[in-house]
Length: 126
Image: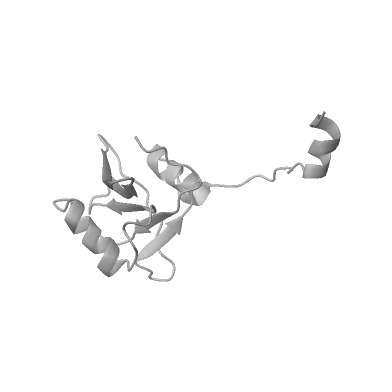
């Protein structure tokens, strides 16, 4: 299994995807419609019309990986494009919220104190 991290870039296809498509069909959407490079290592996400299924496609060493999730109940909440873009660049946090069923419009990021290198060197380096 490929560990998805915040180091990856995630692109959500905002159109409706026919889930009869597999590797070659999704590869074609990424290349021609989304105008991206499917072999870049970026993660591409697709949903079906009812939004109860999601697929993620990524190139890993030596080949394409296609992951799929189908919900027993409910739907995936997908962000709507404000500018009619065919692909949205989403963060790892947003992806995790989509996968866990968390409403994206209710996410609030709390302020966090970031400890500087100077503080770390003065207090934690021998």
